[in-house]
Length: 492
Ligand code: SF4
Ligand code: SF4
Image (tube, rainbow, N blue to C red):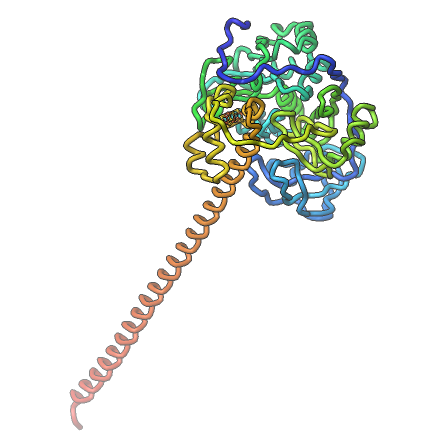
């Protein structure tokens, strides 16, 4: 497939990295942190129950809660409320793992490949952090799926997949072939943007056709790396507002996730990821492989130790960072929040001052820029008034939080922050509704049980009374029979 076969994307922005940007594609490895923090929440922010106890020793790869594994060996020393890299800036229940420095692994030896991927806790490394096994299962419900490998990393400041492809192109292609065999498909469409020339060269040098990998180069338009725009550009299928790629039989996986799957099939659990650490001006970027659970401040200290520009940026602002890219990211206090599967980039240094927003002038620039055809100005009005029903009507769930609308808004309205807030408010409302429904169901069950118990008791009492009456009647009958018998006895 080449450029001419690519379906057009309505909206989006052609972004480019600064011409003087220095992206170091070397893959550095962070030292193992003495303490790793494991938030017990899944991608939908449901709190998970730990299946380990305080003081318990664990091995790397051992399950500590549903879908969460220990990233290294050591001892579970605490169960606390702890900050995590999430725009809500909240704290969540978190296990603290004191590493023993030995990094001993538990073997992943499930026979069924999907069970192996699940046991290895492979989650999407590209964005939302969904369970990969669940995604594959869903897409396979439709028979033989279409496989799309997503190597489209179009936001400046994020270069972790670019570095992976440059450094390990053959491993990436072998991983693609593993997945092709696992899914029983003929080939994989490997989507990459045409400005990733070094990565493209590295992949082409390994003869991707030998691995049944069809490399598709896309012109740079942000956010083509988001699932819905990518599927639309490659297949022409426009996902409905409540659909994901798996719902239309497409397995769409980030390139680093594909390598994680391959590793899992070889028996290695998913315990780490590559994180891009970039200065806020996007001039300097390095890529570090680090364990999940590593405190962000420890990773930042390591980054500063190997890159002077990052060290300087850190000195200029050591209190806040941006988690994610310059458009899709969010501000966060620099603390011991852990690296998660979704933490693809950290921006360090002083951010540009936030301009004061003015009133919306209904120019519709945001609508033109939106890659998923939303009406951001209407969504914004609903979000600021917390009118979630109206926000739903304007398809809040479809918003991919890409930040394109922010970038073009002449009124400097932080639209994406409002949409994030509205999504959070909606999730909270749904959780409250679920809790209320559960409480009502519990109360109804309780009342039903009480009514049944009272009814059973009344029936048992009635039965007892009837038995007693019958006994009394029988006793009277016996007495009468004896009397009659006595009367019939012949007189001597
Ligand atoms: S771009 Fe900004 S000012 Fe223009 S319609 Fe959208 S929200 Fe309003
Ligand atoms: S943040 Fe949401 S509304 Fe704004 S352009 Fe991106 S997808 Fe559209």
